[in-house]
Image (cartoon, rainbow, N blue to C red; front, side):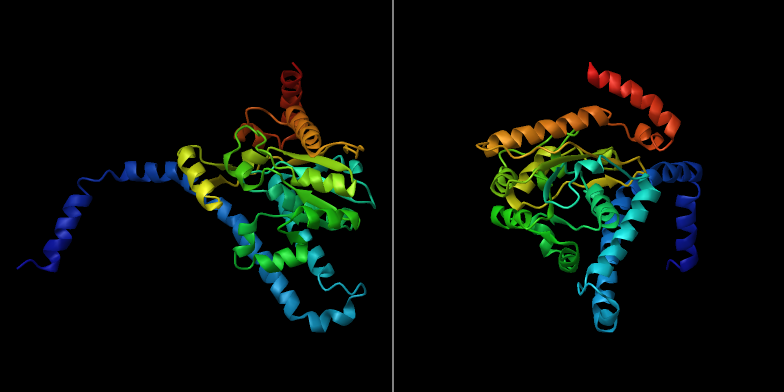
Length: 326
C-alpha cells in the first residue's frame, strides 16, 4: 500500500528534478506586467464604488449636516468632495491638465461634445475640474447599461448623469446648463482605432443643440487611448456580441500613467437654418482637427508616459506638430 512518504517523494522527484526553477521565476517576472495591465482597469471600477460608498455615507448623515449647508442642495458638499478625489487622482496619476477653458461660457449654457475613450476617465477629471474651478455642474449623458449596474444610481443622482433623450437634453440646455455628450458612446469606446470617430448617423446631440440654440464645444483629451485600450484580437466576435447585447464585451487593459491634457476647442455657434447633418459634420471636423493638432498618431504608450517630462514633451511635441501639418 502506498503511504504518504512515497507520494511526497514522487512529487519531489517529478518537480525538483524536472522543473526549471530559474525559468519559472523568469516567466513569472515577464508575465507580471501583463497581469498588472489587465488588473489596473479594475482600479477605476473600485474608485467608482469608493465614490458611491462615500455618497451613501453622506446621504446617511444628511440629517445631521442639513443645518451646516447654506445652499439647501444635499449633494453640493458631497459633489465637491468627490470632485476633489478625482482631481487629485488625475493630477497624481496622469498629470492632468485642462486647456482652452476660456472657450466655455462662464454663465450660459453649452453642449460639450467629446471623444469617447476605452474608459472615459478624462470626463471624470473634466467634471471635477469644472466643478472646482467654475463651481458649475456638467450634466452628462451615459449609456443605458450603466444605470443597471448596482451602486451607479447614487453617482448618477449626485453628479447629474442621465440616459438622455433629445427632449431631455434640449430642456437642460434651455435651462442654462452645461451638458456633455459622447456621440460615439460605447461603440466608439470599444472599437475605435487611432482615435477614429465612430458616430454613424447619431444626430440626437445636433438636434438638441439646434432646438436649444446653444453653442457646441468640441473637446478631446490627449493620450486618452494610451491610458486604457481594448484588445484588438477577436474584434469581429466582440462586434457581433455588442450588436446583439449592446453591452461592452471587448476586454480592457491599461492604467498606464500617461500625460493627459483635455483640449477645449472653439465654440460652434448656432446658425439659423442649419440641419442636424451639417452640424454633426462641423463638430466632427472640429474634433478631428483637435486630434490632428494634439495627438501623436499612431499612439505610443511609452512616449505618452515620457510626455510627463516637460523637456521630452516639448521635443517630441514639436516633431509631432510638423508631421501633422504636412
